[in-house]
Structure formats: C-alpha cells, structure tokens
Length: 191
Image 1 (cartoon, one colour):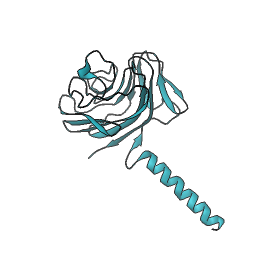
Image 2 (cartoon, one colour):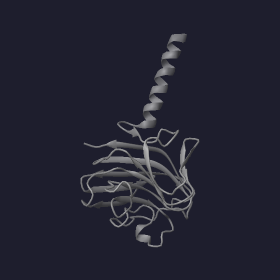
Image 3 (cartoon, helix red, strand yellow):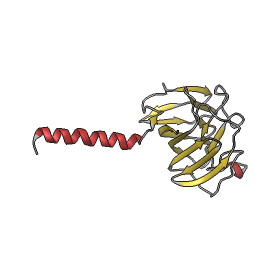
Image 4 (tube, one colour):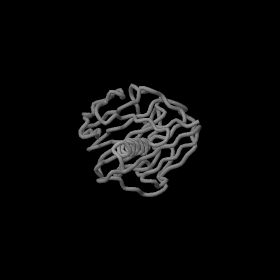
C-alpha cells in the first residue's frame, strides 16, 4: 500500500471510530475536559478527571443550558451500592432540579423506598426488574417522546410509562449521595 493510500485509510478509520463513538445524530453533552456545557446547582463537588465527571459530596446537579422535548439521552454511570445518582429530564425549574419539577431515571440501589430504586422513573414508573448498578459502569438510556418514556440500563428495559406532566426542559446529572461518576453523556433529539 502506498503512503498516500495508507494515510487515506487512517483518516477514514479515525472518522469511522469518531462516528461510532458519538452515534448517529447524537450530540456530546460532556466534552471530556470540563463542565463548560453545564450549569452547576447545589453543593456537589463536581470534578473532571481523565474524561470522567465525578462528585463525592451531595447534593448537586449539572444542568444543560438547552431544553429538550423528544429525545434519547444516554450516559455511562458509575456508583457505589450506597450512592444516589440519576438522569433527570424535562426539568421545569432548572435552578433547583428534582423529582418535584421533572422526571428522573434513578440510580440508587439501596433507596429506602424500593419502588423508586435503580431503574425506576421516580414517582412515575416502578422498576420492571431489579437491577443493581453499584460498583460497575452502567449505560443508562432515557427515551422520551410525547408522554411516553422508557428507561434502560445496559440494554435492559427497567421502566416504561406515559405521563404528560412535564413536556420539555433541560436534562441533568445528579449527585445526591456517595461517589457518582458520569462519562459519554450524549443526547439525540427525536422528530
């Protein structure tokens, strides 16, 4: 193979790898370097280390500057079994996000009220399966289209519901206790 052909193949492979990493139509919400794409609320001690967002102190949220209506949100999440994290969405009060003004796909294995444990959409849909997330990276996905919402963890459907209380708003990463880490945070708007 000539040097020119080798260079073309290398450029093509790099482009394919970058495309696969982002996925068709997905936009990175976390640039892997800093929190410049987020508004920070609460008291969590958010840090970025080696391409990972981490908080060890509660309670806080990273909130997108943009609002979303119909979308697929995905992120890799790592928690301890005692940690409380989650993906919040369609938040109507971004300065103080929570389940009182938006939805949350919860990551909280040892939540006192197990109807809102890991995999649930808190106060809307109980978990369909018992999924323990503690101590490993888990790919969490929320799909919201109209009133219909689905949550999955590592490809397993954990919650599904129809609820039209909140129609649009920012999305958020939560740190509400213990060590919580996020990476590969992406969103794709649905039409």
